[in-house]
Image 1 (cartoon, rainbow, N blue to C red):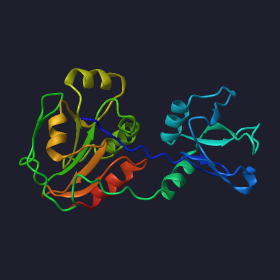
Image 2 (image 1 turned 60 degrees about the horizontal axis):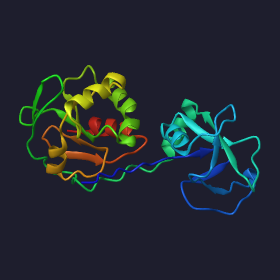
Image 3 (image 1 turned 90 degrees about the horizontal axis):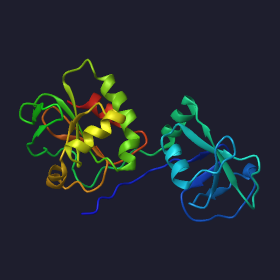
Length: 243
């Protein structure tokens, strides 16, 4: 089965609105044109070295960087440079984004079918025993780019609720145990990690990754969505509002 995942990028230029594909009439930055970025777009680092498309795309997707017109920018040959984004700029960027759309795999208010899971440390999670707790679930796999992008922010969310035993974070990976173990040794992921979870995703009909959801204390879905650059904030809001 082929698994697909959405990658929502908010690409910022100081005075230029951007989109990912297509073309648009060229104009000077001061006229705020709509410049369309493609794999052929010229984007450099601070030293002027051209960056491959996947490199600058991933850098901007983290929210830590933005694109600005390069010193040699011209309407006929628009070139851009990757620069660090301040925390304030990042906050404004996220505030402008639309809220994540509900995933097609769950329905708000539905009671999630019972599950019994075991994480990398051998701990067992029985949905019946989790009654009365808020459960945050993440479906992901190692080679999913957006999945990896959101892990640092999800880790911050886990740390935020570290003193609360009524909030449980479970990450269901499609990958085998050994692969997940090797991955988290280099890139820590603070959720309780459930491996070999392909059958679980298939059971719930999850076909796009990452998919995140929050269950209230009655085991009902109160939030469900796919990738979003500000996912952690929406998960936190759902946790706080869960009854």
